[in-house]
Image (cartoon, rainbow, N blue to C red; front, side):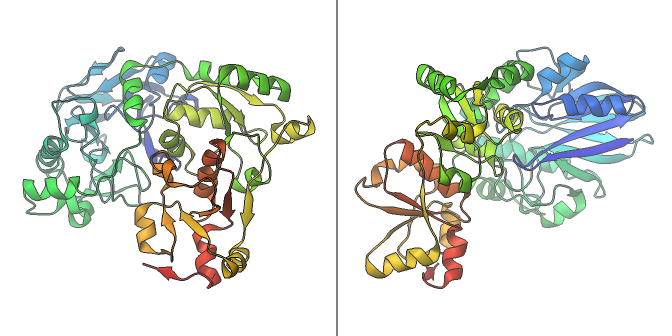
Length: 464
């Protein structure tokens, strides 16, 4: 038997490939499906099942494309009603995969169709639990997402279902069972996930707060629902794509990989109203960029920030990317449902400059340079980190406006004042800076190295 976790750090997401004999199953695949197909071909196997643990909110699954390309059967647990062909399994039903067996365990709570898959080896021994968003390492799935699509549900009702699912379906399973969750630390589908991506169920019973022995239903509901932040706005839109289906990734890539000369790029931008998305590093962007473009660097938590900051997944997008990374960017956009990339700048920003087109830049200062400025006048420092990060330690006098809430705080800023922006290391502050600059805020200065350099300089008191 082959069992492989395929982990994608940008989304903190785990997909799984299981093979027994010449049959394979893929659990919760990403949008780009060729890697799974090639893996099965190399191993001399045919993909028989695409197992979905639930209708995902944080990414668009590759289930539809993978089934079409391989003839595999898409499987959901009880209560799922997708708009495409799929097999809706019954609670407790067993699916044969080569010499192994996969048992369906319906575990409503994160969503009502949420389902775990229990893998039994050739001898019938349970060896792995693919727990989706029902059980994470150190946490459980947040119970507030499904209520967005069903007015009869609320997070307390969902949490109550989750309590029953965990106590009655999961916790009685063997302690030596390996738990394989759909997400790890960094995902917005939970609030307290570990950086570890697997663990034994027995250890989780000892260490996971939500599996605490003797925990009452009321205690569980309170602890699981408190401290939940507002989910990214793109989540319900991704759920609908996962339920209704979507355009093939092949067509998305073909449309996006239209190489445009600078003049054509500018013309398309003007005619279409497309968003110009620059995915280079913060440092490269600061030195020069196309006016009104937005910087979200590909080498960071790219897809989640795109989802959090671009409200409409149907928004047409034009790309400025590092040479050779255009397909990667288009793919990672499609992972979270942004399928409408309509071209990229051929030759990148260097070609734009060489063509004599208009450019803009972001002013940056070091911590030492800012200290010299602050010695002579009051400076306005904006900390764009999350509220929890700010509370752990921040520069005295700094104002916290998290990047997540940038659209809610626009009115707070005075266009006549100069603001000095920072995050932890420079990624988020450049995103923040680019968005505000595109909206007419010209007096914004980025602090190189972010909070780390400010604190290390010793020139700015840090308070908690």
